[in-house]
Amino acid sequence: MNEVTRREQLRAATELDIRRHARELLVREGQEAVTLRAIARELGITAPALYRYYDSREDLLARLAEDICGDLSTELNETMRDVDDEHLSKVFAVCRGFRRWALAHPREFALVFATPANTGGGRPGAEQRDSPHDPAESTTRGDELGSVFLSVVGPLMAEGVTNSPPPSVPDELREGLADSQRDLATAFNTHGIEMPPEAVSAEAVYMLLRWWARLYGQVALEVFEKFPFDVSHADRLFESVLEELGRESGLR
Amino acid sequence: MNEVTRREQLRAATELDIRRHARELLVREGQEAVTLRAIARELGITAPALYRYYDSREDLLARLAEDICGDLSTELNETMRDVDDEHLSKVFAVCRGFRRWALAHPREFALVFATPANTGGGRPGAEQRDSPHDPAESTTRGDELGSVFLSVVGPLMAEGVTNSPPPSVPDELREGLADSQRDLATAFNTHGIEMPPEAVSAEAVYMLLRWWARLYGQVALEVFEKFPFDVSHADRLFESVLEELGRESGLR
DNA sequence: CTCCCGAGTTAACGAGGTTTACTGAATCCC
DNA sequence: GGGATTCAGTAAACCTCGTTAACTCGGGAG
Image (cartoon, rainbow over all chains, first blue to last red; front, side, top):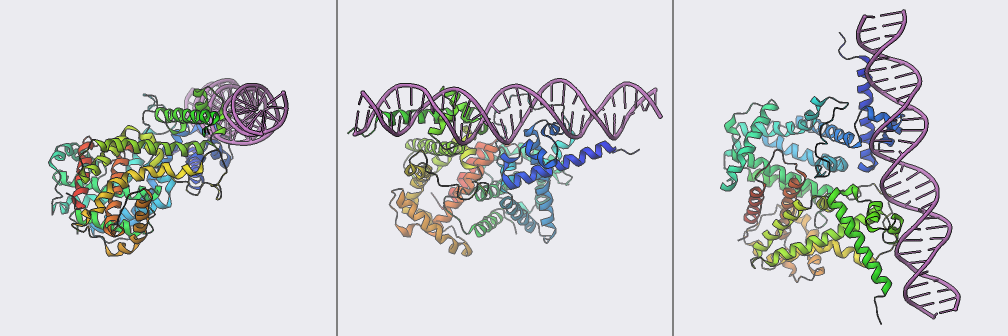
């Protein structure tokens, strides 16, 4: 009744090895250095062998991106462990953790958060393939990261803290946010966070979007060094962004 | 006294052709499709011939990025022509124009605004090369875009409008902003915009940073489709970001 | 009329992704 | 247990790519 056969065990092991080495190459030398042949070389096998595990280089990179999301998730979760139970403290901790991670792993950040999502490049219908990996796993890892964010934002919404001063979402937007409210509510359910549906208000969604957009913008600009001039005081600038966000969201 | 010889004329023409075709490939099929051989093929020449014009593929891509900045600049300038003379209107117009352009040219956007800047990948000292192009031109095109933004922000600062309600820059930041104030002041000079030095206040710089970070974040998230859920109402969301920025900056 | 500069060519190298046909060992099933 | 089967891995090959080196050959300069 050994559900996991020896073959599957070995397979899983080398699969892990492949991604470990791929990851190392990505970190050390950048995305374009993540080469099937280079990975195979470091593993002591030949390049075509990798096709037993992945459909193509592109496929491998996509899987790598999922791994990265997973690792970022666990890192953020660890970060939050050492933080007091104030909801806002946790939100701040996650934001700071995200920034720290992005600055420490620029290449991973670029791969996961700034890669144009197949903008018309691929032939349509190139999505489905009956290929060597569990399709059930595919959505899991990517959403793991969302789970972290949700788990930190959820409590805020549940307590309705966000509504204390309504962030005044523009009327023209309110209607458009309805879809997102539904999406977010089901997301909470999916991730096992109990959430009264009325807590997912338009204001809450609007707040969430603002947080993400500003956090992302600030971090991406730092990672890509695309500020209009050198910002030597990036740390303090980031802190003031957080503070501002907290204030505007009616928190604390 | 014909300063521009026939040879130079031809050279400039094909150089333009090269970039035209490179650009087309970038737009149609993405960055990795911009291949020396592909460009040469479309031009009816052979790949090594391109080395008469560029040091390497990387060099060509860098030059392409500058071209793109230039085109974006002229597009933004044209956008602003049809806008009334209210400073705020112009700022909004530039922001909307930037977003429109980014959504219409995702690959160019990715190349120029979301490419990790050689993060330790290159060997140090690989910067200078005595190569086939005018070095005086190199800084010009990239700054052209900055010029557009400055030309629209400048008037605001000059009139001191931004100070009406001081955006309350945190004390810890004020000191760190001094460098940026100097940078910005010299940038105004460089771009031929007269600007009283006292107008480049810490508040003004802080405001500028916020505008850029939020504009960039919102646009990049849209381009890369990295919002946590589908935002069908992206247009209205963007408008509300602008409105919020205007309000927070004490404008109008 | 020469000489030469320089745009463009051909040939070649090494590296990359991917496919095809194969080997040989582990597994499965009777 | 033993043959059939599955499957990780190999070898060879194909095509594309960036880049270099050695050349051709025409227009401009003296």
